[in-house]
Image (cartoon, rainbow, N blue to C red; front, side, top):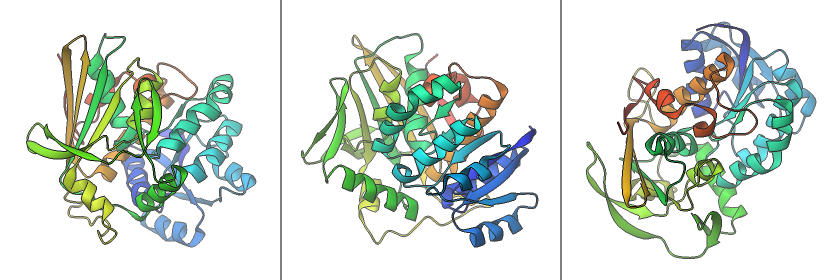
Length: 343
């Protein structure tokens, strides 16, 4: 698909940003690569003929306005999103263009819904936070699993990762979140986010193949606790993480991901297993793939494509499951993702 106006990728030189730019170009979108380091952007542009370079910093609103001038949309890939989200979505609203980000930071996503809902609705501009592996994919799976249900008692999102080699951006964002919570943990229960000092506990989760039975950290809380209840009546949203992945993340010596194929993906395998329950009836939805950072690119780019084509269900600030037809969106991600949904 092609588009006359370009899509701006802010944070294009980062690990996820590079995947997003590559996916946009693969799908025929003109691209503007942006971020704070002009030299790195120019070096990246040499790899991608036709890419336009527009450096900008989040503490300079005029530079952001120049970066977004004449663009069709912006994808924010630059964390920590607690720092970048506000300035860039404000620039998008000034430009009147859609904003998509890949934030996994719970508090940054809460702020996006709380602080920009009115302005985005009044401007009739789509704003989709957490359009990524964490927050977006789980929300789509929960929404698709619920189908015609208007409410559920509980939604579980279990993350089976064979490993987790975090990027520098992941580590920086995690540190910001840790500081904002004063080291506390967070859960979504009784219809609200609650901060607590309870110790993490382990349980077993039987994932579909190829992972099978695995130990998980129960209530290893991710951005789904913001996206899912933003539009679904589910008072309990619980996310769980495979123990081996949690240990990798906690180990400061775990190296960054390394590519093992022509697409630049790591050898990490993931299974996201969703279980929703209402009145004793359970429904399941599952997604399998390779590399949590790489899969974020088709998620974000498919969102941009649907927004620009008018295939949306609402405007203003909305999660993936609220903005799009969840089942149709997930099926469109083949061959990037293998999905099993309720019939």
